[in-house]
Image (cartoon, rainbow, N blue to C red; front, top):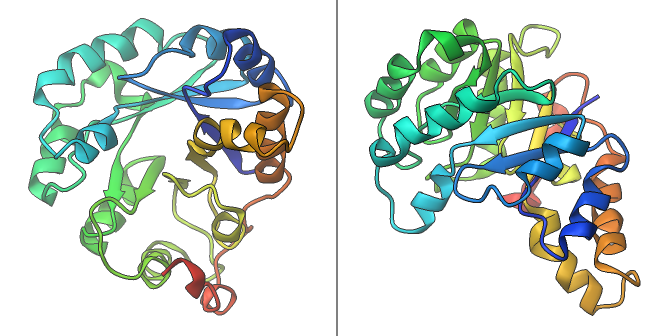
Amino acid sequence: MCIKYHGTPIGGPRLATSGFLQKNNRHALIPFFRQDDLGAALSFCTTVVFDTGAYTLFRQGGGNYDLHYDAYLDWVRDYYRHPRFAWAIIPDVIDGGEDENDSYLKRWPDDLKYVGVPVWHMNESLERLHRLCSNYPRVALAQGGYKGQFIPRLDEAMERICDENGQPICKLHGLKMQDPKIFTQYPFSSTDSTNIGQNNSRAFAQKKQPTIEQCSDYLANWIEIHNSAPSWSKASTKQLDFFE
């Protein structure tokens, strides 16, 4: 079953957020710069992953992660033994080069070796993707600063790291790839998005459900009822031009 990590903060009253997170064995992603829902997630969710917040820096104009690196490591160390904690994204620079991002992998400490997940950005080489997948049990795939067509590039990635049966050589996480039209066509072990936090207030305003919590459930249920593909086939994804 593909694990769907709901990016936080969810938004709305704290009680509604707690109610949302404890339903349906949910999973949460907590960004370093917005830990609003950390307590609720660790109390109620099945698993929790930590995100660096590098995408926030990217949206704010870029910049490396050096100013935040040590604090992020301290945060991960504080919680990585918690029974709900699953894994943490290794810091990266979304619009950086491969050498710059590889330097962050080399800096990742040995005591956190088995909980760190590297990121491959679509503007990086397929050779780097294969190297990461060959050396880590899980790799996160991200569109990052890539400006080309999304689906053809994702197909190129799968062609490079899947065997003759369409099975990837490691677990794959799709960063911001929680649209069922996407993950149902690819063999992702997990995905994430901030869809709930971004859209539950809008759904409430449109009277989709009577409360914010019920609107969050309404949006999440549509994601959670779908599973990822058991394997990858280029023939099954060639019609996905809606996202290009």
